[in-house]
Each structure stands twice: as C-alpha cells, then as structure tokens.
Image 1 (cartoon, rainbow, N blue to C red):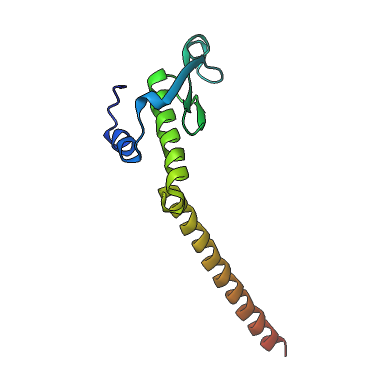
Image 2 (image 1 turned 180 degrees about the vertical axis):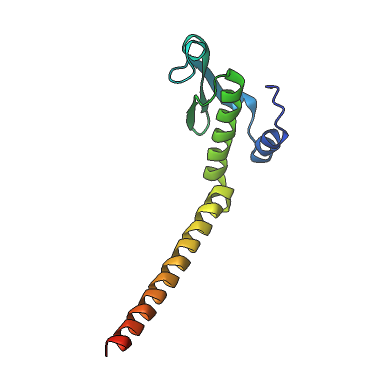
Length: 124
C-alpha cells in the first residue's frame, strides 16, 4: 500500500473495490516550466489501472509526490465515472450545467421576444 495522507482518496478506492495491486505506475522525466529542477528530475507520473485499461499521465507540479497524488485522484475519478455512470459526481455536475444552460437559453429567448414585441409596438 502507498502511504497517502489523503483519506478521501483511500476511502473512495475502498468503496469502489480498487486495490493498490491493480495499478501500474511509471515515472518519467519532466519538461516545460520549472527550469533545471524539472528537466533533470523524474517527476512525471504515468498511471494505469490494469483491469479497466484506463491510464493517466500527470505533470502539473515540480514534485513527484504532488503529481503522483494528482494522478491517483484523476484515475480514481475516471474509474468512478465508468463504474457509476450517471450516478457519478462528474456526470451529475455535467447534467446540472446542461440544465442551467437550457434554462438560461429559454430565459434569453423569451426576453428577446418581449423586447422585439415592445419595439414593434413603439414603431407603429
């Protein structure tokens, strides 16, 4: 088991039935912003969940531990979305945004039609 201080991640993994042995982890040298520290050190993380075949590459931070934690969080979220489908938190957020956009579209179209109607009355 990997020693993570993130209890939420460990709890979510237990709830989904994920084991540490199911993950294949590789580290790669980084590139980009951060200078010599990033370019010379191995801080990029490539993580794969063997049973599902999902994989993630992360190189957000200068440190390995930050990228590693971020990769696990991202991959567990992907697996959760795949297993739970529409019940996953990501899918629920997406549905909420779609409903908001529809509501705003309806409001703006009704407001535009009332403005056009009032303009027509003023022209006559």
